[in-house]
Amino acid sequence: MTKPSLADACLVSPLTCDGAMGTQLIQRGMDINECGMAWNAARPADIMAVHQAYREAGCQLITTNSFGGTRSMLERHGMATMVAEWNRLAAKIAAEVAGPDGWVLGDVGPFGDFLEPMGDTTVEELEAIFREQIEALVTGGADAILVETMSDPGELCAGVRAATSVTTLPVVATFTYQKSAGEFRTMMGTTVTEAMAAAYGAGASIVGTNCGTDLSLDDYLELGRQMVAAANGRPTILQPNAGAPLLVDGKIHYNATPAEMADLARQLRASGISIVGGCCGTSPVHLAAMAKA
Image (cartoon, rainbow, N blue to C red; front, top):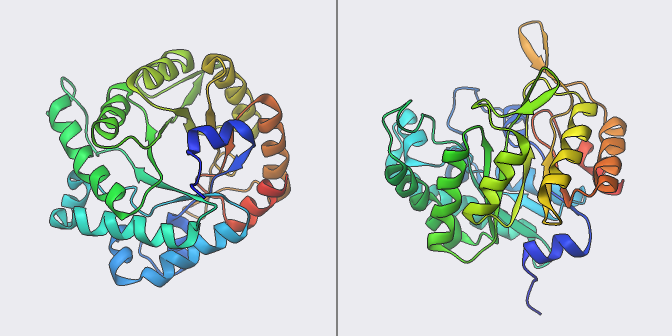
């Protein structure tokens, strides 16, 4: 039996995406300055164990360990030549865990700079950077492409176009928002309505948000309601942090409990969000409570 497209499945029943990867790897010994993607080759059992913990928590969507997988990001670690190999491995490992009833999101994060005129990278150059990574993720077994944690609609749309130029798989696109004077905007000043219209217009199948600077759980709920209104019946996704970050003894902590995140997940689903997951500070324990809710 052929697995349904993620874009269709999320309209039939609520789906749960997984949570944070980086903090899970740090708990397993990764240095904060280390290249996490290198673990796809050096320590694949650890990557698989994190995926498995989320899958057992009830997450149907498993996100590849490839957030910093573009050539431009890997160059910072002197690993630019590893784009194809490490992204293929990331998707392959996730696919082994997701199984026939789960979906693998091929994760594409920011490329680490600004587009012209703020930076030196052209849209054409950026699309080529994204295509290289996305092609490897598709080859490795991704079921959809996730273009995430974007503040610039131009960058996000470049990622979406790059994906649709090399695959017919659904594209999930998420912005990260800040709240200022009671209004949600990206770092570039884009409103929720403007950002979502741009993403859908570029060809994304599912649009939403992840992360978010200093957003409370109540903020995420209001943001979700605004997203659903802007989506006009199209699928949405929301992956909140475990509350607003707190600085304790020089380290960032997220203090929302699994029960609090479960309550938020229930309310987000009731508001019309199609897919609920987690971002910074979330763990398999949080996601288990959220999936059950």
